[in-house]
Image 1 (tube, rainbow, N blue to C red):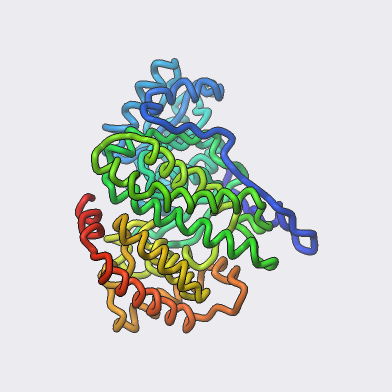
Image 2: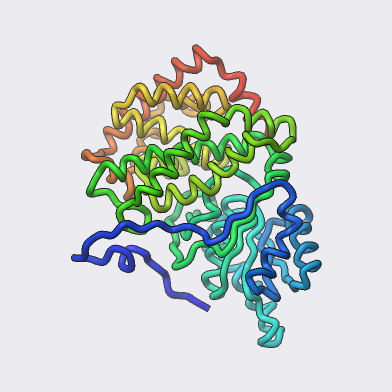
Length: 405
């Protein structure tokens, strides 16, 4: 078991040393309709004989149940632990204790070889934390394309009330990531759309880091050209196929557009954000979690999408801001404060968001001095643009997507 925290910056970018370019990625990624049923074969290929399965109570009776059957067919034993819904230290410690207790009753040769996290973003991140503490590899079986958590070697932590409470880093990316697009197609449209909001940030934040020689990516290094090219391809895929992919989910079918967008939301965005770097968009998302009325009612990707618009306002890039806002309106993401249940007149709430964003270190990857006052003003500018776009495009898509989950 490992109780010592891992920090990548001293490894990849030690003080007083040349800062290298670093790219991180999972060694294996499998995506397609029906691949959940093959998860046992994939784990057998990795040499696992006994694994833990972390999933929500609902997940254990649904997708994790399919994984259990696939493991059994591959002669891989498994033990289950229930994820309570929040990636908090309390939840992580509870899962570690439950698995440790189960293993204490087993012989040495019956200890788990890996942990499988089956679920959405918070379950995935909690699984990484649990696996690290147990000293075993993590396998991610992502059941929603709502965020880019599956491929990275970092987990976002929350308080039990859902407020962002830091991050944990790991020396290895997940050993395997599996995404069943049939499962994604049968989930709510809102999850896929939220994933597009999260993924759209990848290129705009990576470009900031690429263009600013002083910027650093998530592990403290310079971004590679490959990571930034992946981020650019991610945005291009969303613009080209996002609307068609959302339609496929509404109609509960898998097609090429959905496959491309799921890959963009998961693999391209996952590699792109970790190795390309972050900036203001995710900082704003972190700021929004300080408002319970937002955190409890909106998804991570919806908050990141609003952050993208604010970052572009900070940069003064009105052309891109308009293009992104119009695209977001067409797929049903929130584009103004009113769609998050907020008001431009609520100085206290917006001030808390701005201050929360300032606590996100990568916001300073922007090539100019960022202050809470500038962030506050950019929130208002992005809101005004969103209001104008909503007046032109309408908000019927947003209303339908919100009602879908």
